[in-house]
Image 1 (cartoon, rainbow, N blue to C red):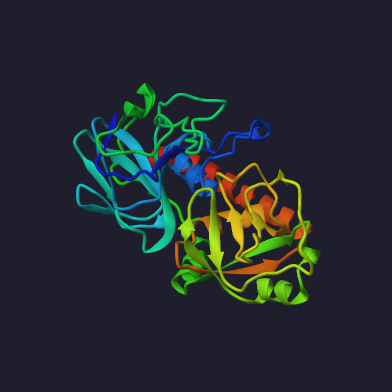
Image 2: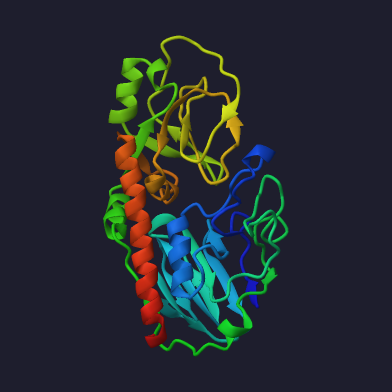
Length: 327
């Protein structure tokens, strides 16, 4: 059992998402940075899709009421267990009575807290993820509040040998990405979307050459960006149609909107591009005020990048599985 010690409605229980429900008007939900959640689960011996806590508002404080293994991944945030500093992307054991504090990230926007044995909340339509728009899943369909208690871990994980030191990992590309964040500008690759050619050549050039800033109007549904106004060659009215995470829409204001984990299931704004799946985590970890550049790529590169990312995840999980008994 853990107890939440800080208010933070944006902090939610998430797994890898609710698939097969778009036709019902339900978004996928799930972790904004699924790679970080998966590796956090690997660090504590879980399957990749087990639920953890996605932390979007800091500082985040939690008290352990029984011993359990845990891991913190995602953003580069100072983390302490009873004032003992923990390295980023690290897993170890807590005992009853200890308090974990995750401070505001130095780089990145979201941290993930996973527990050996997972979080014991009800599975709804195949997922434990919180759907904030539908108000279901996770902890009664809402963010976590001070005083909430969650049942975490299985009997087997609670009785596992405590880690004296713990176990950590530095995924490929993470330090390079953190360096990008330190420069306040990240680059993500995109594919041209259905209406790309409807935009003026000046708008196409601006989209691919200028920087866009993540506005304060940014959440799990999507990021509104501040940058050059993007315009079409001629006004067009579109019927609402299906959209997915990564879709970049342009409303009449000309300011782009990127759909993310809780993306709307349909929309009628023209689409200029789509962020490739392998780079969505980079955008999701870009905090408010960070600048973003878009780099045009092709479908073969996008598929290869996704396969590479999945292979990296599998190698890390296999390596951690071999090392976990020695921690």
